Length: 96
Image (tube, rainbow, N blue to C red; front, side, top):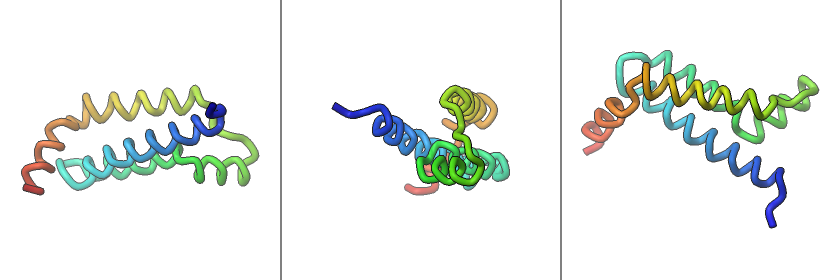
């Protein structure tokens, strides 16, 4: 059985990579590259090595509820304001 820390690390990697992909799509396709860079920077919060560095340097870890709120913000901003699906269509057209 997987313990809580392993599940948290896997979830951190999955969400960190997913949000980083959203940020990269917003950076290179569309009209607001700074928004994409902002999302990429926010995605680092979810990665376990960054979490460990923050915990060692500052002395406290980022609460799970804050990460959940940040994830909801990233999804909301990317789907609503960032028009993610339109940018994915642009990306697919460029790559094909």
